[in-house]
Length: 318
Image (cartoon, rainbow, N blue to C red):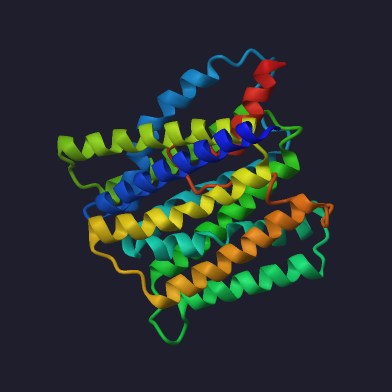
């Protein structure tokens, strides 16, 4: 790929993650009035028609029965938990702190690749994982600051999101992309619909409009991310995710009056440095395994993850 393609890919990815950060700011704003269950339910309701219209173009033969039912079930549960946990964390924690914890996802993907994919993690990547997890502890500061459900939710989202991403790598070549896309969306819809009567609060039309905006933002960001991975090198696109910490600090301060404390800055820097080290080492050829650069992760509920959508588009072109 030439330099111009990589530049376009980087700009596309940066724009996508700016849009994702705007989406998460809306989540936090609505979270001040509504349960994450209610926000997830209605965002899925708005997002599902957009994805369904895309999937209606799928002409490949087959059915929607998973070829790997148990792995698909685990991934579906993990995706649901990852999304709702992320929404809750965005609601109760400062944006920058939530992102800092979620940035542990690439480290956890590398770690989970050992038992699930049978990959080996050498001294360098193993050290980077340990350093990155120390960065998470710096952000959370156990003992110095009271741990909350928000911290637990952010960690749960990172762990479950990592599990969902690595399972896609394990079964993605054999499982239909439509199955990988639809099952988590339908599971979110059903699970949140069951819980909704216990937390429902009537919403004014303006807030319903914000839910629609969330789905539009997520859909647009997903398309931009797919475009970035299509035209640019993964090693250049993947680190663009970390730009969200800048937008989180900016939006958190401007919209919610949040100040970024020193512990979050130091911890986030350690986590980002560790993640970048793993990505760059994978691309350099020093490591034969590439669990991070081949995994497109993003805790999301109203739209499917980027990886399955990219696989689906490739199938459509065959």
